[in-house]
Amino acid sequence: MDGAGWHLAQVNIARALAPLDSPQLAGFVANLEPVNALADAAPGFVWRLQSDEGDATSIRAYDDERIIVNLSVWDSVETLRDFVFGGLHVEVLRRRREWFEVLGEAYTAMWWVPAGTIPTVDEAKGRLATLDANGPTPHAFTLRSPFPSPVDAAAEPGHAVR
Image 1: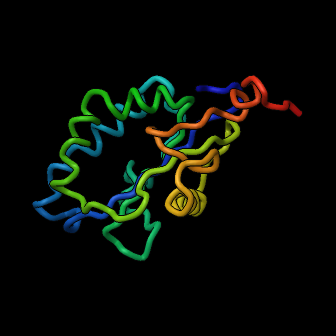
Image 2: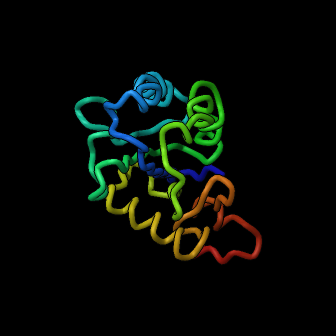
């Protein structure tokens, strides 16, 4: 599911159980830099949201200061999936309940963007809201329910190419 001329944007949010500088989140904070370095070097990685500190924990997407946002771009669903469920990232992911609340709404979404496009935090928030309201669609979907890129979708049998 990688379409020439298209990249995959992904967002995920989490609400920390405590402030980032608390002892409770020390394990998460200690893994931020190594996980980000792995992402930056991962096959298929294109871009990630970050502040001057090198991560996005200080970027406020919501009024709630405990909600952190992760926004990145990848060349395909497969390369994102390989990163998410491999190596150190999956080890950290397995521990997420130690550090973050279980959210009652969509907390991760993906969508296709033209190659070279950098998604905005506001756009990402809108995609999460759309996924929450409508479930997976080509506009906003998940790793469990991915949609093909516009190029790949146009190549599917029975799809009218314009």
